[in-house]
Image (tube, rainbow, N blue to C red; front, side, top):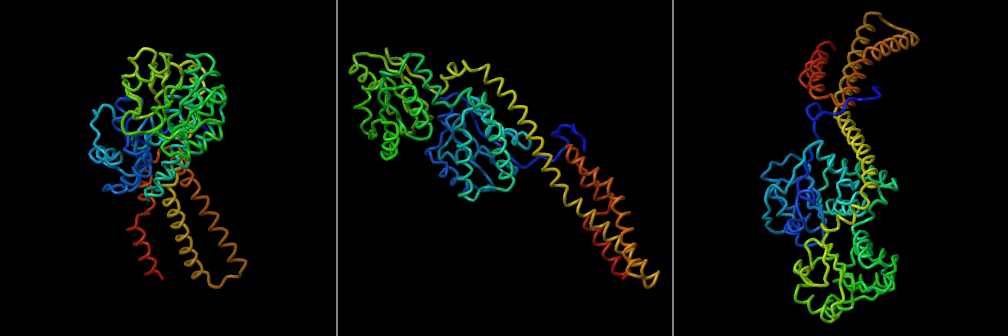
Length: 447
């Protein structure tokens, strides 16, 4: 085997039938992304809507605060792709085409691997994305949309992501969006030991942020969630106080920090209500961190004196403090990911070649058996020892003759040079269905 196989070239190897279509923080600011966000937070509902769309054989819907993407098995055209996101979101998406991207074949596999490994995240190394992809994967399975080609790529991407997360620099560079928000709060207030925090939303991101807040010494933690039981469970764990969603306005004046990680119909706090909160607080400053997409805190709040509002895009400055460490870890992870993509595609190409290899071996064995049959007829009765010697001789000759073409075909597939090779091998060795039928007819006549 060649220890340094040539890189797989897009024009030299069969492309996997996978497509990625969507938009993310790379191509769209938060005010654009929130216009594309699904109507509901449950990925199963958007995935179920995808399952009802015509022509969808396999699909996964990935919706986070930083991206909305569909990962598809098959070869849909541009018109089909553009229609699928509104279908999954449950509403019309009126966003300029320049905000969307499309990856096919190898580029799609590479994107899937990079997303799962958090290399495509705004904050490289954040842990939530892999869990979010796995939730989307489970929703796809429940909806009957997990195609074998997509399943194969995802399972390998999960394995690679798990291994890359063993790099402490990659994981430690930026633990999560919630951690970054809390670090920003610490930078503004200094110590959090005398601060009261109001957490809006007790989902996964809210839980991570709340635990981190407690470790950083926040004095009081008020937790509001639409499902009161979830807020109560988190409050018990962290010695906080749970609130009903309808109590938010009445209790916001107690909070020095408002951390929003939820979904809502419209703004939970608008400018007028926040002005009233500041009046009740005698204009003591409030830090508001809106990590929700769509946002649930009115952007106009930022114009109020003593109200400091940041959204997910604003947190880039805080995370840039870790840039050198993050870039060093990401560079290593990018190299490993590229190697893993190549390995995965070479395995796919070798798998595609397997039927041809088996057909060649079967044809060779068929020819050997025919010649043995002829030889036996000419030689007459043979002793068992002579039969065994004849069988060993012909098998050895056939193995030696097959070794070079089989090894060459396998190596070419491993090196990603198999474009057209399967068809050429079938023609050279008469492995086409028509040739097989002709051989069988000749064999019948000879018999």
